[in-house]
Length: 466
Image (cartoon, rainbow, N blue to C red; front, side, top):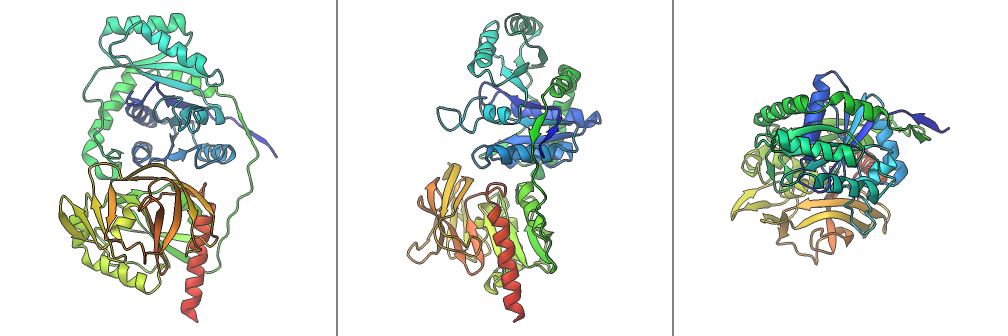
């Protein structure tokens, strides 16, 4: 039965990247939360780092909305489910409003806004601009009439006279309100790294920066007007499928290494494992000396290169993981997890010992070795994906590459049809019940991943009891 979901919502977007979307979004999330408003954050596209900050400031798991990995129905369902307990949902866009991966804008923030029928709040970097701001905004208003630009936030405003001209131009020619004006201020920023912002898990000292940004937002943005615009979004109609929970009669425990090193996990991936009957047990790669009593291990992405010396020092955990892998423990590792399972990581010619399940070395480079969306085809049946030729859509972001890999004896899980993978044509290396890959997946796009993980664990437990 189709139901209507009245969800107050907005999308934060801009004419181009580096306009200040992330800073303003974080300030809005924090300001609303401090005012007692329960705000559900979303991030457009594949990203772990911005969502980590969204989660940090709201105390609510940020979720990703992605048109490449999800079809319209899955994306809309994910948005509705995630928004159920919120007073307002805020989606941070990526790049410019209409920037996608083809001439039709496929995968753009505009496409997401249309799927969830959300009004767009337009953040404009106004440096070296006065009356022309109206021409810019009008161009976006008329480019795609199905996208509603409902208000403008002026960013990097120089002085009062500058703001007066900008406001007047937009209100006269564009017919939409200016919701706020953020002054030029070098303190209104968060430090970044090669993949974007530094994850919130690493940055206790940057909480002061968030507080500073929040105060600026509270002072310079009309939050009541923003709420009013969000409440004006039309209801979403959708037929929600029944819950597909499959609780096993035999308890399954999956260890998840989740800490300052490995923090790249989509909430839906963890929820998918729980919905298949798993209990998740969290592990710290820096502090825990051994694995707990678990039936499988999940190691997400992160920055092992930043903590390589500390990871190397935890010899007992590394040895325990390797021994358990040799004895058949199912292990799934993505990107940073792949690096951790290598023999060594090389950083600036210095070598650090890692787990050593795979007989290759990983070397950090100064530029991306793989960056963007991926399309993989399962090469041969493997411990996690039993059906050859299954198509997997995902993404990769890595500055490392694999050395000393003998491709003639390596067992690859996937053929790369889009992306870089390990060597340009293959990704995913398997050994016993271990699969390590540069590719990141989202369980809503690859539901068979969680199913395969649980099936592998059940089969392994059964074999061990014979």
